[in-house]
Image 1 (tube, rainbow, N blue to C red):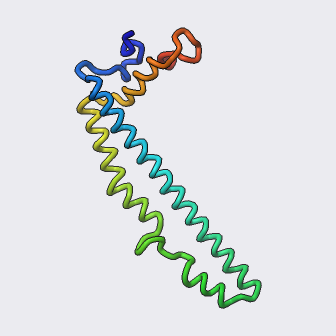
Image 2: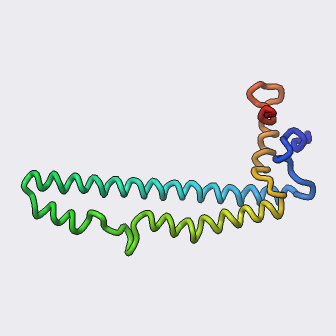
Image 3: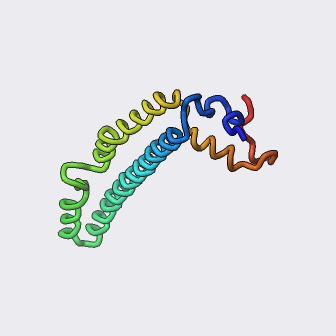
Length: 147
């Protein structure tokens, strides 16, 4: 079976790209995808922490309404708006992660895919699709419909 011929041109493995290179590019892309998931968790952390901070504001208001000024003042002074790590709010953690790690990693992955595979992405997955699909099944087509 020549799985390469079944895929659209942008997912065909270029001449000269051997199986080891294909697996290496797949591993590199999978690692980048994992950082995308980690980044998503950072955004979740950011949003949940921000939500908690606004909920603390509600707690402060309710403590005051209940006559607990000293406790409300302590929460407001020591926790509301507090840095989550020294000198950083969560948005600053995301910015540092993006500029220090994610963006350089994504650029490196892009450069290597360009250098070794002519910029063609997901070649390993495309090959797996051709191997794992059921021929002649309507839900296992080789490529999307032509546009």
